[in-house]
Image (cartoon, rainbow, N blue to C red; front, side):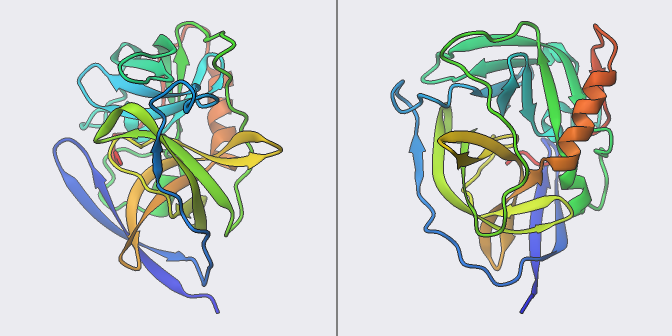
Length: 269
């Protein structure tokens, strides 16, 4: 029997916190035994995850992102806007691929920022639709071409009950990425995926993976922290239609364009 649960999500900016309650039909589900976060502090532990990196802001703070092309980082849209709703210019970001213990496998400036065109800034009442469009691309100043870093393929959304994993940087673990190898897909609504994964501030934009034929493939991007039945959960963007739209925006951009999109920073888990 399908039931509808309340998901309470808190969207935070540097100046304020806005609580939102949305209805999400998740039904009855069984979950795998979630694994704990594992630090990828050593080169051996981090092998294969070097394309996940920390996105640093010139003003301080950070998000997580992942290479999906040699010059293209996928992250959350709310990471690329000011608290007043202005799209931040490219020179406000730096991508540190595979950062571990203060040293990255590659450092890159950003030459263009593209946010999903339907992402709306400073909206007083947030819904699942807002989370569903929480995607952005950073176009790097120079491609990352090294045998140690391989961009991740992207695939369609996982199904309810699937085991997924997350690699992220977050509060208290800023200098090394952490891997949660197994967490679960709990449900969907309006292109939003509810996950049992452990996230915290800074994990916004973190890639959510499934393993297919021995290859890690990105199926979602972390957008928000929330609670479901009084338990912490993560909300992720389903990449199918939103990512296709975002890539279309990238293709339509004239060469040398600095930025595209509208929106504001709203959750930074």
